[in-house]
Length: 318
Ligand SMILES: [Zn+2]
Image 1 (cartoon, rainbow, N blue to C red):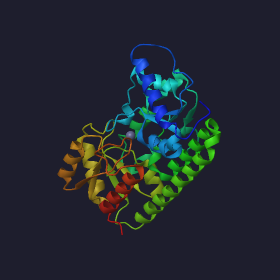
Image 2: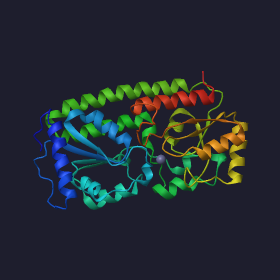
Image 3: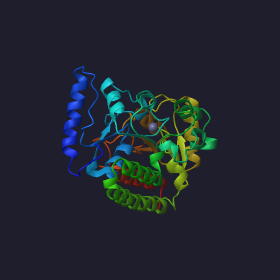
Image 4: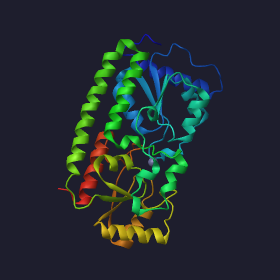
């Protein structure tokens, strides 16, 4: 398995298919070491994006999260737990998906790269605009052990994840180390450009406040000097209280907010109802936990650019 050849991707994919078939028919024999490709397992799209970009054809990447579903509520089938168990590498953010945390702990895959081990995490309490809210500060804290897991919404974090992924893959496949390093560097240059576009695009705006149903954008807000205001607490689909709606209305008026943001993976009905009550527009701000046919772009960088366009329009940026 360590002796990789660059065109082994296709054979690896076939081998993986056989392994999965074996598992589904009830045979408990472990996947053999003759897999011709390194298998990387992830639980959400941003990690799939990084793994695919860095590994190129030298690995197969399996994303456990179905497109368009809620990343936080990931549930794993027995086959998916087996995929974690058999993975050469699991790339993930601990504290984000309880099911994956548990599978990693119990299955002990060969290699684990937990992005929480090298990124600077924000606490959930830092994420919401301070004077905007009390009710929903505890949401992410309850779910995620006090840290905001949405690290990928700061592009510089994605570049860090790419570098660490390249380092780990280089240990697994030393013969392809140069390719992994080059791929990570190429990705870093694209992310640096994206970061610069965000910084300049959001530098001169009528307002720096944005209102969103899902408070996933703490890292983005911190990076680019924005104030994130969350509408509802426990779940993006939960009806906010009348008191909360009144608070949001006051903030929107005081800070010249034009738009209530919602995300593609969750029903927009709460955001739309509030926007309608307040006479505001709605638009999509995508936390990019999944990529689907509803996404405004075909990869992380394109969807982030769509997010930038939406923020610039909503906030009156020049
Ligand atoms: Zn989220």
